[in-house]
Every structure is written in structure tokens, then in C-alpha cells.
Image: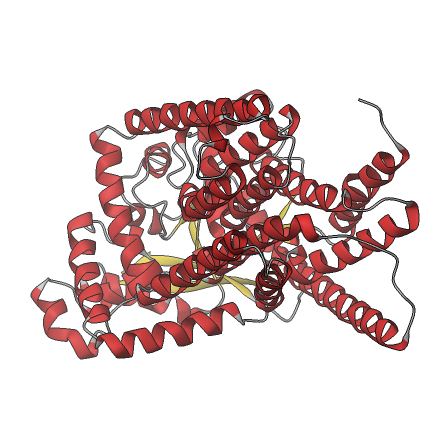
Length: 570
């Protein structure tokens, strides 16, 4: 393959400059894990808490967990979880930029096109790249693969390999996110290949199309193999019991929420749940309740779901639409939502004489909107999901529009100058916002490090922390640590095998056994946040008192306070 001057310029703008920008940003401001889920998944795969690299990552596929566990066992000095997620994110976004820049030639035209694409990236997804999380990265990978497949007329081998890789990474990183985009992928496959048999190689392009069929077969084999391994990996009584527990916990805590105790006191008392126990569960202190099992959580979750769904249908639809709009137009997602809308309208206008493209765009748009409303209807539409869906929709519309995109030198006039200036101001403002957010994340990370350093400096002690103290946390390539003396009050890691092993290592059966040891300290933001724990143990006949040991003030945010307590039995 002959490498042209345009290729070199395109690679410079698509891969080199974005990498340089992100590296400088990483060094100066940092990149951050956005959720405590990422922290927990990394801790499990790396063996941070119990010394065992755990491949059962619950929300990620077992095969991916095995890869991560192997890398941590073999090269333990590197943070492979963050490295792989950042690499997938970088490849996804840069490959899309590179494909877009193929629509122009010449240094000045390509420079202008690159600046336009950079600006759109800054406005829509840069913040999600600086403070990243697994769900959105799964959407990035799958949507990028979808775009790259549709926009390659030649079905080149290299492109097909990249598409299969991105689809598979999307699937193993967050399979539910990948499943959400499969209808969109199907529509694009039918549109590109044709519904009348062209997909199966019955025309002059039979050889390139055969590559697609082979790729489909390879992905199907990978999918089937991964699902088979997944089923075997979780086909044990311990993991089946955990799944039942976690499904109930997720329905209650992530979606439907807790019915108020005062309004539903009769229900709670009938199921043996006191106000003190209710408060502990609601505050994620699941590990403090020794007899909390899947059955008890399921009773509460089913009751919460029944209350959630008993609202009249019209009222629920109205509430779902309002919530959908509020989420899609939130500060963090508004530019991506507007980009999706503009691209959809551009497709309908550019292909006003091509009914098949218009129908495809309408089906995709209506499908994404219906999915958003349904998720709101069912109480399952957090911001990260809306970001993922909008990115999927934007990439699908961009793929359809790709054939009509032509970058050309701007015609200098007053209107163009005003548009360019406005766009530059918006991008500059967003960059300042992202920089300020990075400073905020850096301060929050200093709070994390302030209390976490205690566990490093005093390995003989045990430290119990609230899950709110987990994130955000700065990603670094270098990785080390032993968190075997650090325990969480709850969350989805409760009842997992690695938490059980950590308890065994501490010679305890329950977290309550550790809480009252002389060398155990509880880390929180303020005294009033820990009173509910004392109240609970008082209610079950284990009276205790709280002793404030010290107050810590993070170096980067001295106005904040992290308090260290001890719980002492009476």
C-alpha cells in the first residue's frame, strides 16, 4: 500500500496530536475513574483486597476478567484495567476521526477539518474521556465499530479486524450496553448490504462481502464461546446465590429506590425490618447486617417495584418523558444530545431523495428515543446510559451521512466569521470547564489519598470506609498496593468471593466482627454520618459508643474534613 502525504497528515491529526493532548492532560491534570464501580472492578481483577486476582467481574464478561487477572498476575506493576479501558477509548475515538478526515485532502483543508472535529469532540465527549467509566467506553467502542463498518465501501481486511475487535471489546466490557446497540447495528448492516441478497455476495463485490460473512461467523463464534464460558464460570452455588442477592440489591438501590419507612412502616415491621436496619441498608451498609440475604432484599425490591409501577399509566409516561428530557439535556450531555439531533436532521435533508436512508435514520432515531423513554419508564436511565445511547445514535447518523460529507475551504464572509468565532468560544469555554472539573477531581482524589494513606502507613490496623470515599480516584499507569486491611461498608461487592476471602484473611466471619476490634477504624466525612451505625447495633443488643480519633484535612482541599472514628462496645 502506497503511503501518501495526505495519509501522513491524517495520521498526525487523528492519532498523534490527540495522544499528545491526552498525555499532557494526564500529566498536568490527570485522568480519573468516574465511578466506584470501576474502583471495585479493578480491585477484584488485581487482587488488591485479598491477593487473589479475581476474574469474576460480575458486570464484565468472565473471559475479559481472565485476561485482566492474567495481566495483573504477570505484570503487577501496571494498572491494566485503566490502561485497557483508556486504550479502547483512544482507538475508538481516533479511528473515527481518521475515517472522517479521509473525506478531505490537502494540508489546509485537512487542518480545518481536524479543528472542526476536535471542537466537536471537546464539546461532546472529552469530559467523558477525562473522567472515564466502563459503561460509556463500551458504548464508544461499539458505536465506533458500527461507524467504521458502514463507512468502509471496500470492506478492507484491516478495517474488518478492527470492527470485530471493537465490537468484542464493547461486548465483554459492558455486555448490556452492547446489546442495546445491536438493533442499530442490524439496521446499518441491512442498509449497507441490501435486503435483496447483496449481503451474501451475489453481485460483483462478492469477495469483499465474503469477508463480512467470515467476520460475522468469527464474532458469532467468539460470542458463543464467551457465553458458554460465562455460564460455566458462574454455575456454582456460591455465584448463583450471589447473583440472586445482587439482582435484588440492584433493583432496590440502582433503580426503584427505598419506599419511605414512615409511610410503609407496617410493611417493614411485618418483614422484621426495624427503622435502624432500614437506615443501614439505605446507606449502603449492607455488610453490617449479618443476616441480610437475597430473600430479604428481594422482598423490599419487589415492594418498591410494585409502588413504582402502580402509578397510573398516563402519569408514568408523562414522568418518563420529563425525566428523559431532563437527563438528555443535562449539562454533561446536552452537546452530545444536540449533535445527535443535528446529525439526524442532516441525514434526512441530505438524502431527501433516498427513501431507504431516510427510513433507516427514522427507525434508528425512533428506536433510540423509545429505548430512552422505556428506561425512564422502568426507572433505569442514569446519565451514563443516556450518554452511551446518544453516542450510539450520533455515530449511526454520522455513518449514514458519511457519503455526503465533503470538507472544503471556508468561504470568508461575515456569517462564516461569526460562526467560527462562536464555535471557538464554545470550545474554549468547554475546555475551561473540563480543566476546572479536572481540578475538582484532583481535589477529590486528595481526599481519597488522605484517608487511604492511613491504611498504607499502618498495615497492622483495619480501616472501614464509606463507599462515597472511593471516587473519584486518579488513574496512573504504575500500580501497587495491598488493601487487605481496607473494608467497605457495602455496595455490590458485598457477598462476593473476594470479600469472603478478605474476611477469612482477617479471621472474621462478618464485618461487625471487625468493626469492634481495637485496631479497627472507621473513616467518614462527619460524625452525624456514623450515628446510624451505633443506633443499629444498639437496637440489636450490641450497644457501643463512637470515639473520634482524629480529623484529617486533605492537602489540596484543607477546608474539607475526613474523620477517623472507633466503635467501642459498652
